[in-house]
Length: 326
Image (cartoon, rainbow, N blue to C red; front, side, top):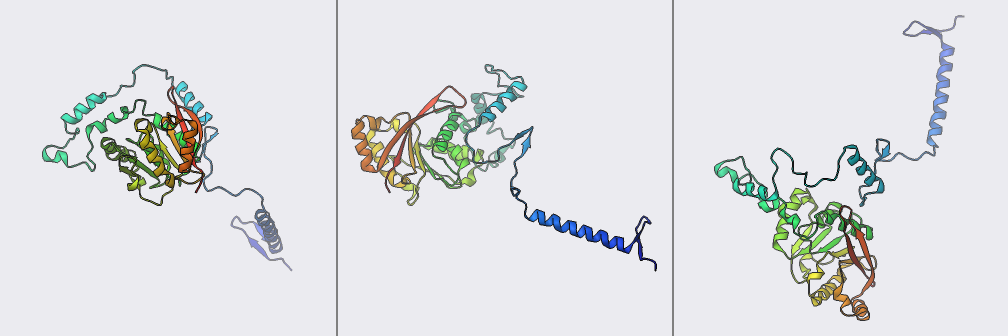
């Protein structure tokens, strides 16, 4: 009796037993393959795999704060490869270069360099901004380069192991030279500030927040004097409270009033208060007397630290305190 046959599309004749055998072998092979995969000890795939660029792995940790040694070497190599050298005043280039003063004159003379004419010229700005802010004159108001704000942020954020869900209060945030870095890093509504100067607040609200694209972060920035924190509300415990070169300009008595009001707003044990430059409000009392007064508030002085700048020859001095009881 002739065996049943089947013909493929290419005209090849295959007997049925051979076909059945082939299917059976394939089925057995597939079964063992699936079984082996189900017991594989390989690590599970990550949701966000590392990206490889030029032989190096790019860091996917979006909460990383300071540049690594590899980061610094990379940017130095880019400078070298592009043949860039330290030069004096060579950055003013372009089709129509202007100093800040010249830009401001143009803005004032031409009504914000609007192309609209007549009454229409004033109707196309969602957030009208003074020319002084548009040319960033306020970046020169702090006695040191604007870039120093990044240095302060890096030091404070690393010293407290800051996370996006942490809550931060700055006393005297000015025009957000430091605060802007915290706002970028922290979750919405987690950065708070008390500032007394109206012009600084105008710069923060009318220029810095919109230009940096962080209006959605909703930082709580309030105007207040004499260490009055009532507008910040109650019930919030801060992971960190800091004053950068602010207590230097206050009477000692007012600083102590402020510390007394801040203690209950600081997380016990893990929360930190940082004060920059010096703590003469404390040292003028004498070491032992200062320790006693801090203890009466529930505060403890921990240490003095310094932090080097990334971009210019400068370091900052910081004094660290904690709340030692709930």
